[in-house]
Length: 124
Figure 1 (cartoon, rainbow, N blue to C red):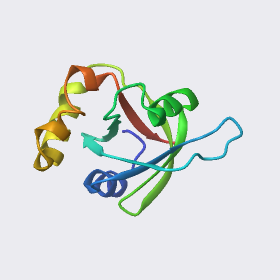
Figure 2 (figure 1 turned 180 degrees about the vertical axis):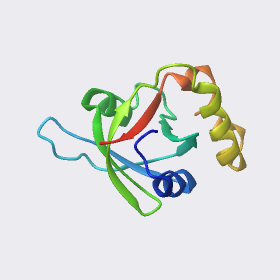
Figure 3 (figure 1 turned 30 degrees about the horizontal axis):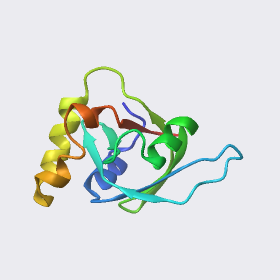
């Protein structure tokens, strides 16, 4: 189990948008950034639509910790690069949830290039 409750998985997984913030070295939170979030199985994932050079993504991978807000849930999280082949399931979750926004937009968070910017969210 991922450490998320079923209610948290459902509410965050159903939310269209997620607010994400990484921690600074002094422990304070950076301003929240709005991104998409998906649920694949019992895990929550985010991807950077603008790749691994996107500032929020770089800060999240460097700090490794932050906070999310979505679906009425606010939790401290650990940002983890997922191990194993989760990318096809994450791609499928993005397609299922966000294809209504069109292929250009969804295309920024699916596929091999987008896989490099995948982070798993774990409760901290």
